[in-house]
Image (cartoon, rainbow, N blue to C red; front, top):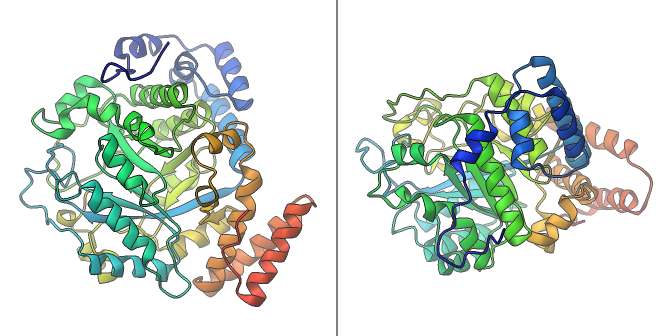
Length: 472
């Protein structure tokens, strides 16, 4: 099929076909064949994904979990990438019924950071040790591509001590091609856009037609415009709880297949947040996803799109995050504050739970240092790596490494280097002790060779001469 966008918008979400595929019966033999294909690091098609999604038998689900654990170990090792969201402004022209920033909600506290406030926010994040940010914007005329590009440049240009932000990702409204090109020129990493729900009837229900976001096709084809404008790192996602979770997984996989077939580049990341309490939220959410199905959908996504990073946010509790990271997730946020200005204004914990100032409520309120120590205790390597983006391993080039599972050759050394920097500059004594022990343990287990030798030399150079940011 020719997926080229030559006649306007292209609808690659076939609701009827997805419903048909999800009506198939559970088949243990088919599941075994699908798992074998995924473990060969091959992406699944829609029929194969549906075969996993219809599984209800717990013993069969355990086979899916075990395959996801194995695949994650083989491709990602024990690394977990860390980032922080930074809300720039919450003015919004949309009226999404589930959102605490929606236009009609007059009780929401509206604010856009000034340039000086943005610099202070970045300094506050750098003092904690962050290196990777995702900037979040409402959909408003004041958040133009030029405005977004300017805020990105401010973030990159703001430094505090040894602190610096090395990768700026974006979560913002879909743009036209010219807008995407403008933002790309500022040096962004991933541009992230969530479809929210891929089910057209549900999309109309939650997104009024008289808003820009009410245009399903404009949003669905946003990544196509971004690729055609020169962006090559994309993040997609769905908000789970608006419609049947199995349909949304099929929508995400459909989107990944479309991008891969059109541009030879699948999504760099996939996100799967569950809907959480928000200011003024009073909805009949009959499709809310329980913990067991949530864990399972992450495992299915891991197997369906092996090369893609999976992001789990602080919407989820520490207990859920701990379990799901073992078989699916490769990126999490830490030390998260959703209130605009909260990273440098240090509001009280009580005020920070004020939903009038948040888009939604988070469940994991641990600091960055607490999160890192928790990861270390679970034998995960916390990573602030931004190497691929900065040396040009993006887009199709990144896929050449990611799809066959070769990306780990670079990721583990870079993760250890960025962890060592954090331990040297920011860690509490307990975190430093635990982290240095894990670094020694990881080095001892590494195969001898040039990369290990270079890594040892660079770690020693960091310790003795303060030489940092050495990229593999």
